[in-house]
Image (cartoon, rainbow, N blue to C red; front, side, top):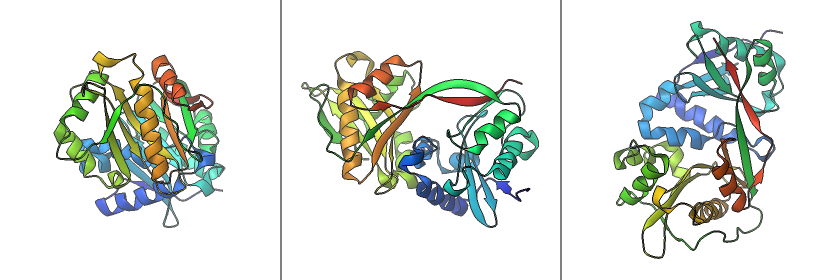
Length: 292
């Protein structure tokens, strides 16, 4: 049976409604999916840029799927929990994502991230999309207190009055100069940041060595780590593990059920850091790709 869906980019009011839906979809039995924190991290580019990158699918007046362009040719998608296995909706979504005329993705090579267990993954494969980049999800159950691991860091919550050390750590960690104090302020002004915190770790000499941002989706729901970074001059001392544990503990205080993260599978050092912090590896997830 055909599903009558409408896909569109949201107005600011619709974006708030879409974020509320995405927040409500987070759950432990569908851990690895698009999270409000993913949009929160992108908010450093400003609210208008986030709104332009979002596509909402509606059926019968309800949001049934959410897409976020994480770059011009990379679409991150998830589906309302009650529609995960709906084959008709999956075919409609795959058709929209595959047709440049819908404005969802341009023609040519592209990739789509979808949660495992959804009918959408099979529908994309049936439409000619193949297997792409491998990602490793990791999770930590927050039912019990989080014990200290790694180095002895002095951890502080980052506030708007003093962000320069935090942003400097991330610029060094990722060898990318784009994350300025101004970008931090834009990120912190976004709606998802109301349930987020940034932590800065200093070593015994007071030097800023590591930073993490953690995103809650509300009590009883999974919280996301995005991103975590260690200053290039201070790697190999256990600071990444220590700041990761501190971030997970903060999520637990906020009532999160689980802390999770997803990293490219070929980033061995990142996987090792999360495992050292007590996280458990979940099955690898493959993007869906179109070569031409």
